[in-house]
Image (cartoon, rainbow over all chains, first blue to last red; front, side, top):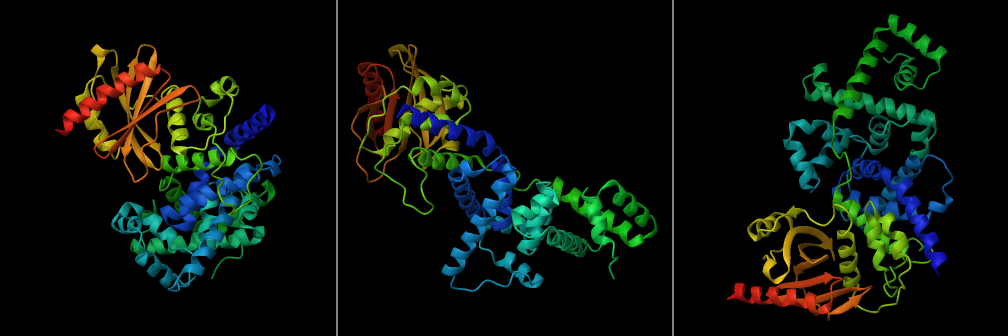
Length: 188
Length: 261
């Protein structure tokens, strides 16, 4: 009995030491993916639990990439569940105009304050990007992952990572220039 | 029209090219205005994104929630399958909560020898004992340090959902040393901290709900005394003797009754 408790504690301690340092990264990724604070919280909690259950299978590979892969899968599961429950169909995400409309109709008070807040233009522009572009951009620029890691997390070939990244950056840049009247320096 | 080299320029910017290819891209962008502009744009976007601190770190409430979920998960002997119902019959060892903070390891060895008797009572008791144990770890005891009830009481207004009775009973041997906000049973509880000789007494308070008032009990060597004043439930937790703990309880009950009049 005592031995069992000891090994359970060991496992918990190892988990806390190796995985929990990446909780912030998991939260950021979930937050950018789901665009809603409460959804992000649920996704992170579920991801941490799944990670804990699968912790024994982890063999010295990149812990952060492993955890973010789980976050991504939990997010996909949550989206599927929401779609099944949804009565009103959501606008198609890849349409830039609809994507704009989508942020505008999100019943999330935070996005309202984002709209009011000039400082956070970037967050708004980011959330208007299609998810497949937003995720590679977040992983590259905010989590500073290399192409190989991004490919692992998003489960697509490196070539696809590169083209999505290029499209994401171009789209963000273009929208930004549009908003700031074409002034490049406004990006800073 | 996009330059055919643009993906390679991006890879160069991302540090993904070997030295030879990097040199080629550098030579190319000397003669290609489009790729020079691209490099500039890439840099602008990166600078902006990395300066933006939106969602920089997980909020403390989420961290606490994740820890609670892990506590529940850790108490189960074999890993629970995804989607399986949380088991409620299995007792949650009180010391699990103690591991959620830094420093938990230090007391792990000592506590591992406790006999974990099964309990079929309110899980709130476990939460309270965990919260008490957690509070005894360095830097967890007190958020507002004061022996003045006029400092401690207003502090709660901004930090918890309830406003408990607070007083210094130094003359009777219960010195007010401060207050703390704690998460417990899914709500923010106010904790008033007293010192009695070498012992710390945590007095938790939270809004009463429909469930009945738990009976006074002893858990893992800690006494828990419950009472209710107005719409608040109080619980005093300590490792003092029962008489000493109940001494403080009587003082607080009297005070609460006076306040109510």
